[in-house]
Amino acid sequence: MQRKKPLEGLRVLELGTLVAAPFAGKIFAEFGAEVIKVEAPGTGDPLRNWRAMHEDSSIWWYVQARNKKSITVDMRLPEGQEVVRSLVEKVDVIIENFRPGTLAKWGLDYETLSKINPGLIMASISGYGQTGPYRSKPGFGSVGEAIGGLRYLTGFPDRPPVRVGIAIGDIVAGMYAVIGTMFALHARNNHPEKRGQWVDVALYESVFSLMEGILPEFDLKGIVRERTGSTLPGIAPSNTYECSDGKYIVIGANSDSIFKRMMYAIGRGDLAEDPQYADNQGRAERADFLDEVIGNWTKQYPLKEVQKRLDEAAVPVGPIYSIEDIVKDEHYKEREMLKSVTLPDGRKVLVPGIVPKLSETPGDLEWSGPKLGQHNQEIFAGLLQLSQEAIGKLKEKGAI
Image (cartoon, rainbow, N blue to C red; front, side):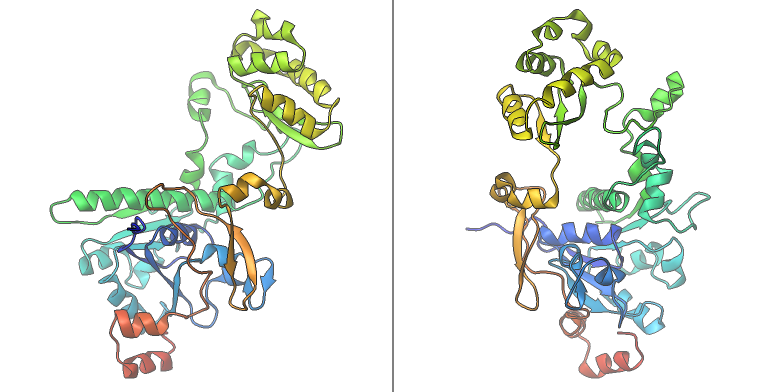
């Protein structure tokens, strides 16, 4: 008998737009939760119109909104707010990414909603968190990446800081929202009164949490880590190297045993046995020299030959893939990371597969992103049991 997905029976109300909260909603939906996405009537989530378009929707939308249900509610209107409060009675989780204070203005804050549903868990994602002097400032993921320290470290030392090519700050915050919500669900299940709680996720804190040992290094040693381009500061050898065909490959030989294997593989057994390079501290002191040695070797061979030789020596190595390279890769295909879905017009398109892989209750991709308001009738008439007359009045007032 096939087992259910791990989150089947969990109902999530998604009040967020764009990236952070909807990314969290996507993860919940992939693993079986019923995710009801609330969108503004007429316009919907702005992500529907971001980047490359297909028919009347962005292609990104079909990744971010998969497995979700879409309803339209104008939360600025009292009637729309009442619809949301009615839904709160029937959900386990709310995820949102409004600026702090916005939902309170509409009577949809955690304090108010938890009185309606004491078991409710609300995950709020914001730029700076729900408290502190910056709480009311607007904060996008890009700003969180800057304030959180990531942008300062990204790029080359002689050039201005650059960004990672995706919305990494929003995505990390969305993951923390999922993690925090799962912690809160576990705590609720163990609480004698099944009480929920509020999960406060700040974009800048989500980014800052990734900053390894940078804070204690500064506090104890006064070290301010700077941009180092493609190298890993204080860890060697680990860099990007050019091959004879002009392609680039990443090599990480920064553990003691791997370094030895690599040096023998490139014909430098003398360095493998040199006490100077026996540990990372010694190698880090002469990282530039080691990069030169390795770079001179890689330039003698095309990328595939470099990879073959280092694979045989069990050295971590890999080419820098474009999306075209990814689509051709057999490992991606074998791991089902290139999933095909059918769009509303019947065309098939590849989208990323499910992460992580669960052996017994895996997540799956059931359908691509819904049309705006596609599930209005199902949710309003079915879940809320509103009459057609009541639904009609809400439509007349523009609340749905």
